[in-house]
Amino acid sequence: MPMHHPDEAMLVDYVSGALPEALSLVIVTHLALCPACRAESVRLEAIGGAMLENGPTTAIDTDSRSRALAAIERAGPDVPPPGAVRSVEPAVSAQVPILPQPLRSYLGGEPGDLAWRWRGSLSEAPIGLPGGFNARLMKIKRGAAMPRHGHHGMEYTLVLAGGFSDAQGHYLRGDLAVADPANEHKPVAYPDE
Image (cartoon, rainbow, N blue to C red; front, side):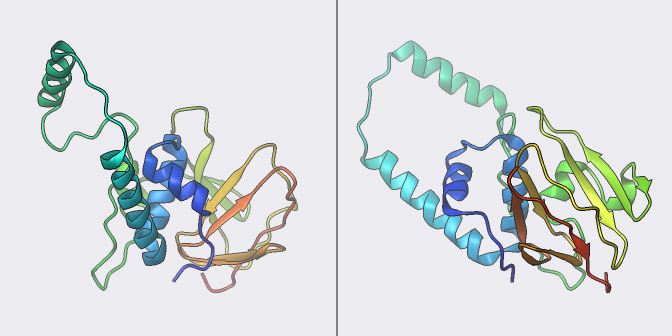
């Protein structure tokens, strides 16, 4: 069970569709690994749905309604809108994949299918995301320490396997570490994985 979670404001932004695609991918992958946050997101969606049901309504003209319904029909079934990352399928088999859904589907394969670049004790596989976000999968050798570093923007690290520690805490599979530009840290991978 993960111990480090997105804050409630981030979950509210996620369920309302206000997060950029990159952050939605991080959150939905965390939800696949975290039953507590998955339950909280369902609760928040129910609150949002109740607010929409009980909120004020606005009449639309017949042409607008017809165009909207025609666009929905053209899209066909099971076609999510561009940028939508919503599917959460928790692992149910004894053979748990390293990349949980929906990340595995988003990337179109397993870690071995990606283009990895090795840099000493670190290897990286870039993930192409829209919106100017820099994202990558990272593998750090067992017990290796990363150089002390800071960030020019926000950094969101979701642990998919193994774990690491830094001055902020200890992080295992499913944990979300968030660092802002004021944070300087030196992550150290756990020696066992």
